[in-house]
Image (cartoon, rainbow, N blue to C red; front, side, top):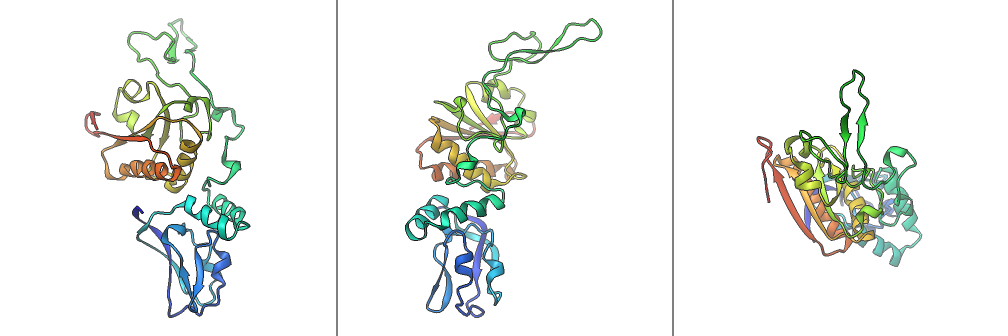
Length: 275
């Protein structure tokens, strides 16, 4: 089991009186009273969100950050289905309350009705109106459109692109190579379209500012429910951007798929990159 540094519940045995109030409060079924004390059954069952904290009359529970097993939602769901099927719904609701997706949540499939995030295929050229008699300027040109010699051709095949807006299933994921691209990459790598977007489905996000756990869950759903062939992570060379590769690896493990995963690191100085 992969070990990561993350938040997790700890139990002060001296304070715990074994009342068991924390057990039903845990949406993952991760707690149990053993020999008169509350115990965490498995580190990978605890999501670290602390739903059980307020139920302990002795204050024996607290959330700490430490190196432990990675949270494994698939294992949690398997455990709940075998021991307490009625808690699956509570588990899904618990994650929703914290803005996280669950692989067992049918409501997370699809996107909202806002037109700006409806899944779309290849775009056509669109021209900006010329107000002074000058030639119109291509604002967005698809791979099959024409562009002036001084402007690069867009290789974007889909919409939306942000990972938190992507639908779980979409035609552009079919038999696709997926590029997971950090937000800053297009600003540092001038040939992002030709080098990374061409012939790829893409998902864009920031591992430092966005909710990494939600991204792991959603990306795992996308991988499970589509015939994606491979994943390429394109990140900046700064340390915090390494979280994007972690997200990809955790999602791949959670999905149960065996796919090729490659990482590309872009320089912040000159936009050069290497694998």
